[in-house]
Image 1 (cartoon, rainbow over the protein chains, first blue to last red):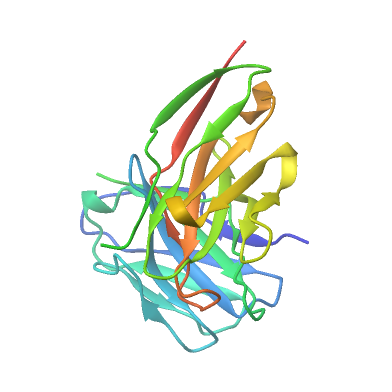
Image 2 (image 1 turned 135 degrees about the vertical axis):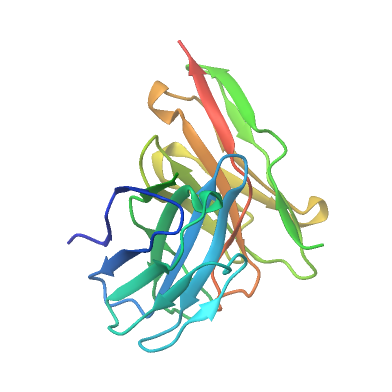
Length: 114
Length: 115
């Protein structure tokens, strides 16, 4: 059981380039999330999805787009990368249980924008 | 403003000593509370969670946390740390109490273990 898998693990981009981060979960979770982690900032929510075909903005959505075409996959896109998007990106998923929402995280994707 | 605060950016503890990491929250209603640990180069692993009931909760790896409503705190403790506990620790809240809009994280506390 792989849990939450993120690809790629590392990527270097030049300013203005585009890329997509893929998150895949094999736990049949309804909810999926993309966070970014920056030194001294903790984790901040970029976008999330409550089910296939749905997405919603989080705390820091600007410059990112997401899609959830299949329940098990959640894609994070950068259309025109900027140095401010240099960060470690974490995907997470969770299932709905009344009164609980426990997130399972992937191992992270480190992105550097030059 | 609603927030999660971890006042200590770094903490250094000797191996075998006790540990307490602080977490305070500022929300109108008591949120659901979590502690996660992140080892270097790894994702986040859930240590423990509090939803309701007994205010002292036990987690994995010998950790526990105590919810104190009067202090709006959820401090993490361990009686005797091991070198393998060196990591980044994050307190998090689910302000929607079981909703789908994710967790809000504190900025983290970096734990250093001295031999």
